[in-house]
Image 1: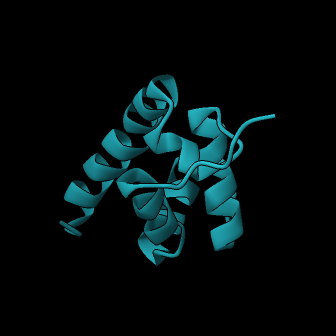
Image 2: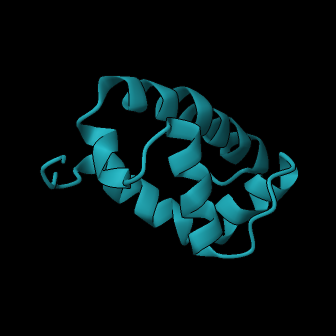
Length: 84
């Protein structure tokens, strides 16, 4: 059984993005059906390979996956859409 870990900056970022309409639009643009913050959060957890977003700040492999599969492509989308 894993001890409860507290999320840090990446977990908070994931929480904010899950509630951003632009993030849901990006998910739709890349072919990921997401209609709600819960759908967006589930996508981020799957992309990083974690069960809890708190692990994004504590698992180096999950952090790297999150950065390459979510942060980088979403940042590129935001820049192209003029959201930055």
